Amino acid sequence: MKIIETITAESFAPYGKVLQFSGEKPDTCFEIIVTEEKSPWRLAMFRVKNTECLRLECHPTSLESFEPVRGTGILLAAAPETPHDYHAFLLDCPVCLHKGVWHNMVTLSAETIVKIAENLEVNSEFFELPSPIAAAVILKEEDK
Image: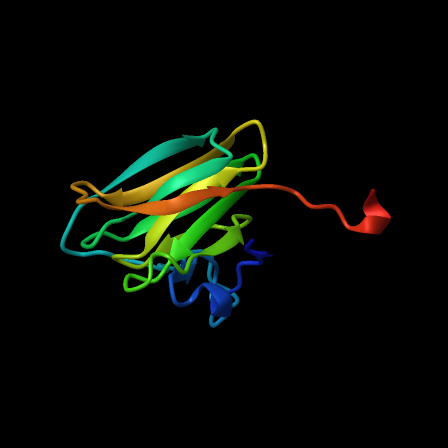
């Protein structure tokens, strides 16, 4: 069982960037956080209805952002070299995955809607998991 982690700039750094203002220029209203100059991007809406995951995927040549819109989603992420050693993050802020990071999503809601930005042309690789990753909410004894 994996504990769902909170996304912070530090905890998510091995997998990508948290999309937030840096705080370096407090008076600015526009800041470019991630840019990909060689390839055009596309925007998409992603509906997640699955509560378990059977495989992870990665895009070796493309960054990919995940921006929560509705619902409660869990983003699974693993380093390129170790897809079996994934982390589960509560997707409560927008993030951008590094190229080659293994990932997938599960929902704790009836469905989760996520806005995605990625290269216009995306190459995908897949890693079949030895057993499904399932999302579950475990209540503390005092919350029961």
